[in-house]
Image (cartoon, rainbow, N blue to C red; front, top):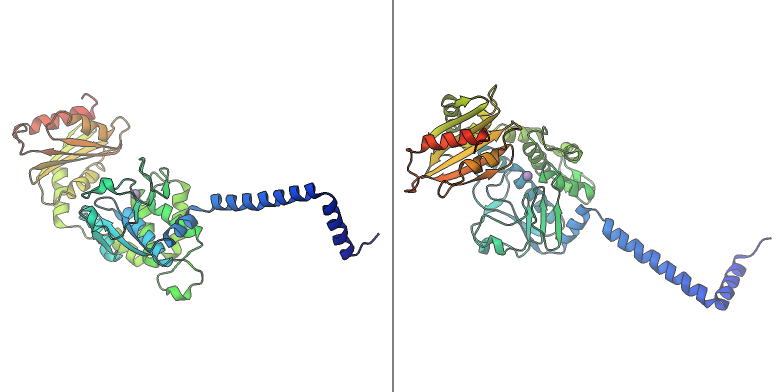
Length: 385
Ligand SMILES: [Mn+2]
């Protein structure tokens, strides 16, 4: 039996009139489906889409890095600033501390990263603060009073953003998280020899930014050799069409100052090795960044599984330790060795630790107790302190 469409509508209307409660139920069901779908859509919107929409609601933002920013922190900040510009939000980048390490200086110069120092809270260019690669503002006067709008990080900690918090502690680099935001937005990485206008799509990853993020992932994961999850490899692969190999080569192989090489040489020459542990005193230095680099060098020595290098600058003794020995938690060892030394601070992770000892303090006569400290460090490495 065939029924004309008009007749179907007529019958349906008549049915609905005679059963108003069914019609009401149907309307409620439709409303729930539409509303629920909208809510589900809101909740499942990717982090990148939510973050871009948060940025676009603001006129300006200031992106903050942790003190003495490394390539991962600077790259993450560049990524956020680029995303902000693409949604017509003005962005500035600020960093506390210094950019001293040759790798960090080279990164900043070669990629022409536009960032300014910050010393006090009044230096903030905007009321809207976004933290990258750390989750609590620190390193400038008034930092503890800053309430960030958004926090994007891969370090443990309980710092939160007022509207947006994305802390992925399993990720090898903060740059991987930012790269994912671009991918969430279907952004196209721009190849180095291509102009942005030649690429379709509403979002792009400029080559400079892609190169920076790629290198940020490399440095934070020891060239993808530790602390990585598949997401770090995915992010690197996504960025790769935009990576400028020329720039990458320049930032990955910076010139090293003669002083750094000399301090490394001294650390090797002056090493005192007992068992698998090496301790080296490099004396007075003008560049304290060379001390951790010397420790990196010493730990590579065959047979050495834990190394500590110390050196002095401006009345402070700086210690830097590395361990690839499961018996030695370097942070705890240094902390234990400095435990009751007046004014000393020390700590860190299992594989990396550091400390500082004020040596112009009358209570800590230097170098009279230099041997004592070395001895304590050695005992701490052996688990005796
Ligand atoms: Mn990082």
